[in-house]
Length: 261
Image (cartoon, rainbow, N blue to C red; front, side, top):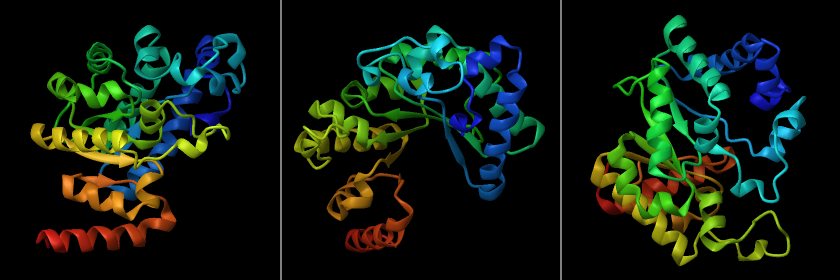
């Protein structure tokens, strides 16, 4: 949605055109909030890498050139070091929730490297007027090995849900770029190290009463992984549209074996 705006958000801020950003983003978000109300809509805040941001109009003025953007200036660290764009996103969420009355809009933070980043970004969220409540949940992406290893600490810092980003998590655990044809054959979400991390995340979430979800290609492609996820106690899954029926059937069959109705 933000890519469709076409212009780098910092360029709009510099030109005092913040209202264009808020207006366009809120119009798109409202489509989802209206369609799904009262069911929740979870908005994942921007996680453009610097090379992606540079492709927007004015991007080269505001973005550094990085040798490895995937491991660079992105996610929660970007919000901490320069919160202006993130604050526009928060203002948009506030607008939809308070002016338009759609309280089903929640927030998810991407690429949170450390517990300190989570705590600092939560301060920015609180300063905007948003606070966790029964109608406003704060989720965090789990896509970095540190997220899986010390998830207890992230949960204790205060989150309501996680979404496992299986694509990035697999790449970072295996040290393999799935978009690089030279090594893409080694990318496999079923690798024992990746499965260990996913199982740990789901079970830790269950221990803390935090909801767990998974996104990425894996649940759409591997019924055996779906079976494991259900057995571990995952709350929800995000899948490709063409895989919905197949995944639902797999989940149903697993839950029948587990004695659930």
